[in-house]
Length: 264
Length: 317
Image (cartoon, helix red, strand yellow):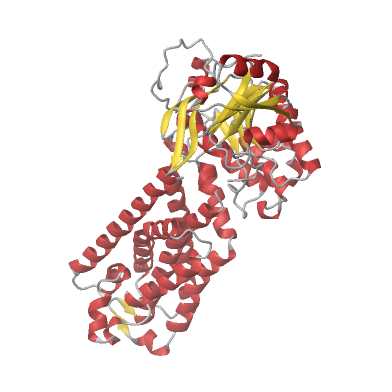
């Protein structure tokens, strides 16, 4: 019988980039798009919300900065869809943990950071499709109106801005080891969307709620992605809000992540 | 481009020598106050097919988790093929078939294997692994629709993908029927004939007997016997000498000739031996032991007594 020598064993290659693999990424995306609930959640819901809230005849004539109110609402709904997508992508980890998949992956060269990167990229793809879907639906209704370049600029702002919520999804995924994380997450995102003024203008809230809303995680991001359309001066508070929540979510995700890899 | 790790651990042996597949030195693991693994010393050479035999809760899975780098030892050292478990895993040198879980229900069998294969540096032949595990024809089936046996074969296929030197199986046939179990072991045995080192945990004596070259009996976190199947069987089928010997310790009784395993319960000493007469003669002439009793046991009963928890039969945690 032949046995392997130390030199032969050490000579076996270790994959670069912590085992990050494009094949695995493709399979993750295919898996995500195969999940009917996720697709409905992140793609269909925001489009329907736009059709419900954004088509009021008055909105088409009411101006909002460089466009009309319908366009304003379109951006809000695209943001809602995009953050749902990035959050649910991260939260999928909790389902994978429940199925023992993350443990199985620890028997492969895939490093935890490479795994998280794969999940982030996967949810970014879903986020992109979500923004695209809402914008196509909006465009088809002929109601939203804004300069052509703003369709692209606001779309990109929404897509990239939704990254703030990727660590939030990871955080929730690690925090809630349950198959029901998606329902719970949908509820939280709905609350945050109201808090951020995505569904109803904050100016219609009572004063105390308006003050409180400025501290919720979607507030800053919502203001920032509308800014290319509304114009005017940028409030530094928006940036502070978005960056602070990004830091909080990232810290939370890293904290749970460390705990998780140490425990298993 | 690939990266290589710095030379690991206590590697004084020249590169041209073959390190043992598994080397455990004084290995311990405790969870709070529970000592799951107690000072285990074990060396498994490359090419051996070894069964880890013991009842549930004996410490088999805890030991396997440490060998796989899934948990950190509380004490002692271990090396896998002369390196740390993590270094061995990154090179695809070690793989495992776990008891349950570890599969995504919404991927197909083929996708699961492809996913796993894509994470290793050297690309494996996915169809070949599926064929060897006997699941090539269900490659397009969703994992969630596969039977327990099919899922277990998929885990086996996944474990073969990196062409590992060491394959670890943790109670791989739990929940399989007799026929499924026989077929599964057939593929494992067939694979081991190619020279792969195999370590499997089981609580079935007959499984260990039929498929392993060497059996390591583990009980309450300690190795109580280690030898070929025939040796362990003769050990298990020997007799027990029971005597009253105040102040006895297991340490002091190690020198008793012919003793295979020694157990001290208060003033009572239990010595298991293939040559009970020799033990009895020694105890009566060289020590103050009295009230001697010699009993013989059936194979299964002997195994349970050897591995059970203070005389209880298996199944305790």
